[in-house]
Length: 601
Ligand SMILES: Cc1cc2nc3c(=O)[nH]c(=O)nc-3n(C[C@H](O)[C@H](O)[C@H](O)COP(=O)(O)OP(=O)(O)OC[C@H]3O[C@@H](n4cnc5c(N)ncnc54)[C@H](O)[C@@H]3O)c2cc1C
Ligand SMILES: *[C@@H]1O[C@H](CO)[C@@H](O)[C@H](O)[C@H]1NC(C)=O
Ligand SMILES: *[C@@H]1O[C@H](CO)[C@@H](O)[C@H](O)[C@H]1NC(C)=O
Ligand SMILES: *[C@@H]1O[C@H](CO)[C@@H](O)[C@H](O)[C@H]1NC(C)=O
Ligand SMILES: *[C@@H]1O[C@H](CO)[C@@H](O)[C@H](O)[C@H]1NC(C)=O
Image (cartoon, rainbow, N blue to C red; front, side, top):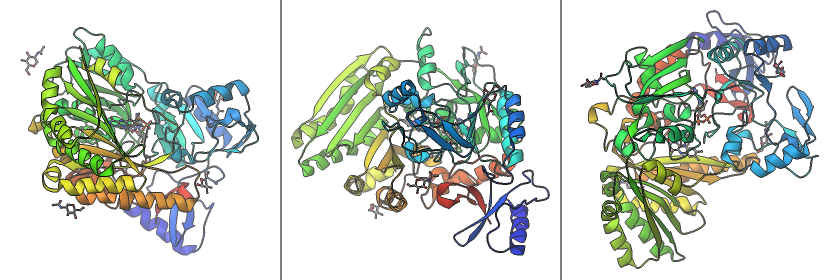
């Protein structure tokens, strides 16, 4: 991918063997003129520029950037800092203690929206290295950990352009940050400059889209920072009430990481991924140029932005999606909690054996398995456009089998005038501020048909390892015409998937490094390893999976990977953008305990 650069840098290294830090390196024809050469283990690396390096911009340069972005450049202070006397950051010490602010941070630490609104916080604190947590002892140390160093609170297109240009020209680690929901830590990064896009809040509906696609129905154009609950509320207020594909979590953004990973949700049975419903993007590419991407203009970029991986091809400024008329819907909850393991797993086998049946009848099923022991919580089964009688008819064979087994369960049901009303009433709020490693796999229709006993054994392996699972049953091929299956870059295998699992391995963000490494091994090879083996027709979802799986390219994108790699080379040949395990990042590593981002030479 970066052949000439490699050759030139390798040459420079041969001249100067051992550790070469703080040495200017220029490579003809390469736009970012400065690298820091490091040695880690037995390898040489060319790294981005960090505080203290010769190539880190000086105060005058930062001030100039601040002027260009309208004074919206901020030194990043971790959200827990008001509880600490001193924040010891890479740019110097700052006195931060503030009792009232500390109380506010402490009271809201686990609240998703509180963390979303911090300039550069990550909802999963593992990836911030869990430094500078709220505390009652102001003398506790507060360091930056893996939080970013500076943040541009972007308000206009030109602010984003200035941030991209500055990061590219100075070879800085650049992070695009919207809501900070990322399970893989991709919206934070050690030593980085952040462009925060959450300020892009426009929402505009149209009844007759006049764009490039063969589509002239209703649509909505949203700014990069809009969250699901905001757009869904306005859509519901229309007459008749409208709806669009979003995730099941109302606080995730709809024009950032979600669509670039694909974006599945309760409507996926009918309309596919959020990416499948996208009509157009306005984006800024690594060269700092504002572009339109739709089926006629920059079609390759349009395709890649629809599931090809976040922060890999461009920064999205706004996105336009199809909207749909909402429908009366019904839902059912089910909870099984029993001390008898053999009865419990038989009940899980019965429930899960119907996954194909559920999605073929248009149901969306959200469930949690193994949180707090032998617990299966289905919260809820969703029948969009279904009456309670129709939903119950689909569920009846499962309930009959559970009754025959004699397992105790609780269940409840309700129906609503719209899916939106059901969504608000039956889906539960999630929390932020906790630490864990996220993995995941999907189960193919064929796997359920051919290997179901092994799949349930794999579930047992997951829970026995101290991990737990969140399942999402849908079929992204159920209601979507087959000729639209390849219109976005998501792995083609998703069209035959019936259950998408998230696995979580709890681990403290400040655990000893050996424990962190062991948790990662457990996730990759024990927990997800068991699921991969039992469901060989599945694949993995880039937004909710282990980025360090051995075959991530194939797992995430299958046959689409080669095309995505070419599009990455075309639009970001020099690695201005970086998110772990996105197309073309094979040679990039975070060395020195997950800190410096470097090209391996
Ligand atoms: C509680 C919870 C529930 C979830 N439920 C679902 C679900 O039902 N369905 C589903 O598909 N996913 C779900 N997710 C996963 C979700 O898709 C990802 O976390 C997603 O990356 C969040 O995107 P964001 O833009 O809101 O967050 P961020 O963390 O801010 O960004 C995520 C990634 O996108 C990049 N990015 C953000 N904005 C832009 C932009 N404007 N241009 C370019 N790159 C950008 C970031 O650099 C980062 O790599 C869930 C996550 C959580 C925490
Ligand atoms: C950028 O400018 C604003 C407005 O003058 C100022 O408040 C802010 O501290 C500056 N940021 C930095 C990093 O100096
Ligand atoms: C991150 O945490 C680990 C312990 O888990 C520690 O060894 C390391 O120094 C920390 N790094 C930073 C940059 O905070
Ligand atoms: C929208 O497209 C359909 C068919 O694709 C066509 O019949 C209809 O006239 C179009 N409507 C408008 C308002 O252009
Ligand atoms: C079924 O699962 C087992 C155990 O993981 C695996 O070894 C086997 O290859 C799977 N068989 C099929 C047909 O998928």
